[in-house]
Length: 397
Image 1: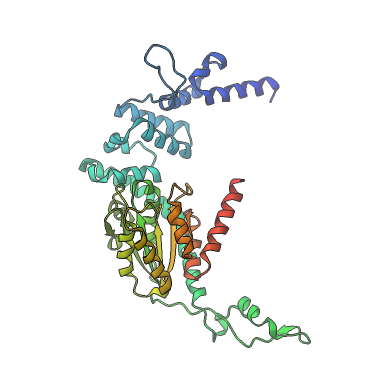
Image 2: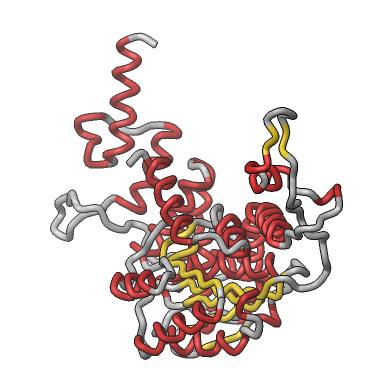
């Protein structure tokens, strides 16, 4: 590429980044660039500040017309990759207050389905007209199917492997011997003259069983800030519930508590059973969940919440302490999403850490490994620290 071509390409890119205000110095965007620029301007550029002068402040330009917004949604899907489209859709909903337009079926047919859109639709569930619900369910089902493809196989593999390792026996059949651990356990019996280890104790894997080996209770905060976590939690709960070796319960809460366990065969129904928004009573939710735990040492309790407690804080902490003392493996996630840690109550997180229960944000891709660690009763504090280090390394921090 010649120097002139490099300069033109650099000017073109800066023009696309800066938008309409840069037209005088960098020229007019033409062709496909012009169409992309128009789509971006409709969302991010101001058409004026009311006195005839252009404003440098970015603002909305789509208005409240459903047909116009639907055309714009079609345009951005044509000109931008799906990851960018999802960001622009979310920006449009937040900046232009397009929430009410999502109650129209033609709008739902135009949007790119993603987790954030599902969260918005779930928050509108109680006010959604009947004519819109079929289209909304299709959007939710599309996203659920995408998430299941992403997480189901890894989750089942991680959990099954952890259950098998947790069922080690000391008198295994030859085919069930875990040779790595057997050798490690018998290194003191190494015979130098024979250059081998004489194992006095064999360690193996227990044979697979159809019996329920672990009880899992997912307790999910459905306040508005937890929308993405609610979506991922619902899908994970459905995947875990499909495994016969687990007895999985799903409890969602705000100031009230709803048990959605009976709906876990259909994650779409689970998600439409939630009601995003409202206050938070973590203590009440934990109190209900305690009733579901009948085998403490074989139980895993996963609380997914930003920990802003509107109930009785001291009782909440006491209940967590009771569960850990009884042998329940307690996991507290500030979020279960791709966005990382949200705003959360640092004081409550510190109080839980003092009880030996670290609170941290977890991505969906790491959740299967977290469940495996909990099943094997590994040190979850070490898991959380290692996960945080890996995220920092991945982000280049």
